[in-house]
Image (tube, each protein chain N blue to C red):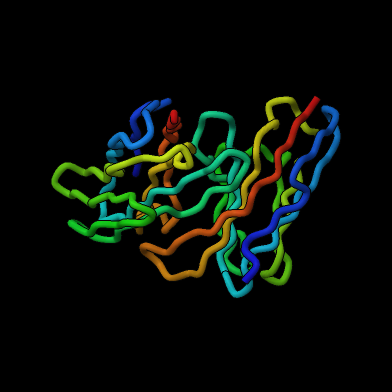
Length: 113
Length: 115
């Protein structure tokens, strides 16, 4: 079945550092890909998404490009802030999953001032 | 649009008791999902509804768990004879049924602690 693999955390960076959180997927069809973020004590919220190959999703300075050839959707940000500290989840949905979200395990990001 | 709301936010119960959680989805969202999340893990799918019909239930879900969505509006998740292993965050999400790429909106969750 479809699956998502994320790099393990926690990832600890200093403020203004460059961020990459790796995400790769396995899917038999053509999934849509998502990054959700969960701030401490809050629910999950969509950060960005991409629905077809080579699409780039972006929001709040974060970007991710749907790479079908490498089955990846890595999350990047050029300069992180303390307020970016959260848990980030990569997810996919596809016809095979009946459009339900298949989740990665999440990556905890800690930004130190 | 007030977002997805869940009630209660926190619940502490004794082992063996029954608990019920409520989720109010965004109005006009016809899909409603329940997930369970434990610390350090991604959400684990429990069940989902399209309108009032429960279309899928996780094979891993114990028969102590039941969910309803009367009239396709709010939903309840009941856990009978709770066990310590049921301690987790229970998340509800809703979405429109627009196929691929449709965003799911999440509530803030109900944190269950079974003592």
